Length: 353
Image 1 (cartoon, helix red, strand yellow):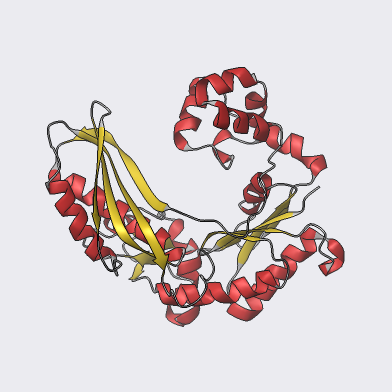
Image 2: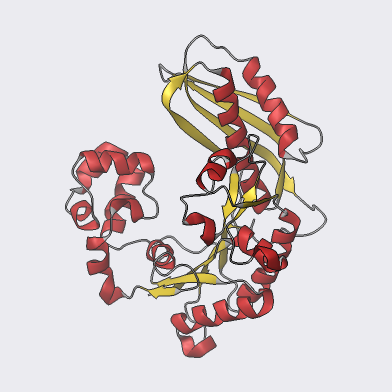
């Protein structure tokens, strides 16, 4: 049986800023754009989360919720440098490290002799070593598969650890809310709720054939498996990404150019943050528009040299939008980056690719 650790840094960007500036410590801090402009929240300290501020929220809304919040601009080069330190610590434990983002990774420590072979002790050693070397706290989940390890890492955040053993798994899953399952998204959660499925136990009772009929072969089988505590996905140290993107569906269809461009701006920054977290730069940016009749189009721009900042990509996205059909109200916008190369093509990608 595998021993999997999911490590998640606590409010990573904000914690780095609080570490480097003592005046920010213990105060509500937001890493993001201009609160008087169209920026979005990249990271929120735990102090500001108490006011309902979350990542990807507009900075304008965040300031309304917490007027006393401190706003700082992201320093991605600093975050990447800290991630490099974390990478070195992780690799001293195991070669099987699968990055998910700058601040999050899976580790497979099966068969490792460190800490007497105890995955729980290894996770605590990892957290202590990260704190000793970076001054930052992290949370960890330990279990026998990736799905349960990721869920466990959220249980005692911040600066905590949770373990889900094989003996605990069935009872834990039975009580788990559907939206807490890693891999079940918002749309699937809504559909399951419509079927009266709100917990792992209820999901476990849905026949496989019905899940496949509703969600398709791959997702239906996956949902059936995780409801029974099965997740055979391996920890993969290297992953090749062909595209990185994000999209949002409006609460109501819209023809309002200002509103739509604001949403494009938000998706641009969110996708850009993901791009830089993975230490990649892109030659191509693509705008996706879905209309009220569910038809959709994509429009792209490819540059000879890679885009250097989100303002540059936003200007192209706005041009793409302005040159797109406006025959129907729009219900969804998305931004995707592709055609990658490493931020520094002269060396290997850092944590996290």
